[in-house]
Length: 157
Image (cartoon, rainbow, N blue to C red; front, side, top):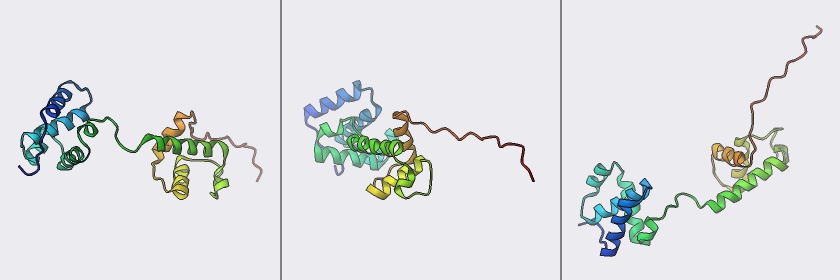
């Protein structure tokens, strides 16, 4: 059937074992998708049964056909962390050793948004302000809201 896959007996056994025993729901979903595709179910039926999108089915079917079963069952997701640690270290260094004025900003204090903007301007790396806040939090740098300072009531007119 068009859109289905062929599994070797050893692959089917591995997928059944993963489906029955894994505690990670994302990996269980991938195994379930591949098992149903191998049984010849249509994409629309699989999407309806598993409450998932056809895009998700396509992603894991394509990954299985391209890279094999091991790549589908990996737990890693998203951007490689090695680069993120490097960018995080860079932002923390900027915040602790430089001021925004050193980079041409007309600000005296850092904000997460300023760090993210600088990262984009210098390296074209796009992350959210929340990601920058988490990086700084891991480095034990936490911004507090500025406290209001009482102004002397002895103002002469």
